[in-house]
Amino acid sequence: MIRSIGLVMLLAAGAVSAQEPMYESFEAGVPAEWLATRPDSLSISDAHFKHGAQSLRWDWRAGEEIAVSHGIGDVRRTGGYGGYHKAAFAIWLYCEEPSQGAVEVRFEAPGAEPGLFRFPLGFAGWRRAVLHYRWDNEFEGTVPENTDTIRIAAPGAGEGILFVDLVVYNGITDYRQASIPEREFAWQPVSADEVRLAAPKPEALTPKIEAGLAKVAAAVDPWTLAQGVVSDERMAEHRAAFEAQRVVRDERGIRGAPVVMLPGLYESAGVPDPPGSPAQISATMRLIAATYHASTDDAQRAQLAEWYLLLSDHLADQGLVAGSGNRYGGYDGRNLADAMLWMREPVREAGRGERDAAFFDYNWGVSEILDADAPLHVNLDELGITAPRQLSGAVMQPDPLVRAHWIASFADRLSRMILAHAAD
Image 1 (tube, rainbow, N blue to C red):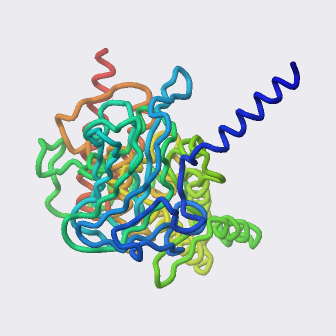
Image 2 (cartoon, rainbow, N blue to C red; image 1 turned 180 degrees about the vertical axis):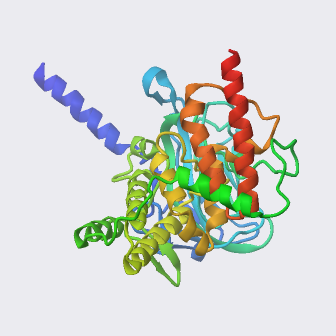
């Protein structure tokens, strides 16, 4: 009996090991099953990567394609409590500069209509797609269960360079956590020119407005007095934390330790040592930001600001920007939110103020405060978590007149929330 059980276990292990891997990260070179219209258009590059130390580079021309001869496993597999994790396809693409048009990703099987999605290329940095095979019509059409070819078609015009990494043929993730490029990239902030304003725009920056801005800034910042020169030991700790992120900038751009949303998705596909979430780099950025304000030494502050900006630029390159599909708000994003608020001045001076303010809006819905007709959600989470972040997002606006308008709009919205709560 024991020998029979052992034989069954051995056969089961052999069956698992014989299955196709459910991911590709190009660490072993260009896979044999990845065939391009022009074979020499595919190569391996260490300029940009989402896993390991390299990715696939595709020098594409209009109308060309990559045919990936690979199955997609069980499209109906589930996991998590109650099966709320569903089977999904995922891919990361990197553009060094925006391109016109979109890549089309088609899932094909003999005798079946393909399922597909489009991945617009009008971005720079990393972007991702995560689509569930059998949930909420996330694909155009239905992905065949017996898919044997995934066809990646270049735009119909132009040419360019595209980096591909961390492809998951079948992983499982929460059914609410799809990232559909055409949908995500269409995000726009609320425009003050297109809504009924919650507060009037100020016409000029007066001494009274400047004094008010200073008072609000002092209220949201957690410090009142600088502490002096920070110890060498503390600076050494920050240097070690910064160096752990492996961030470098050279003629090819910026690179460092990869960051992904949903690390569990990649674990479920068998990716070895999958990249982590933004949690660690966010915690490092928050500590650096706090020390920046604790020091009165110009050399220390300059060094801390340099480290912070490199980490911030790396996060942006990794895809944590407005309209990317990579939101990082809520409880998970609290460290990054603090860091972005506290470092708003050096970030503005470096010319990244608009970028950070837009990402803050993307995470926390800050620009909704401008709209007098936006629905009010009066609950403890809204009052205790979202509202304070929305005030922070207003303070982060680089232009002082815009900042004053957003703060006034926040005050109006908060007043209406309090009145609505009192009336219940």
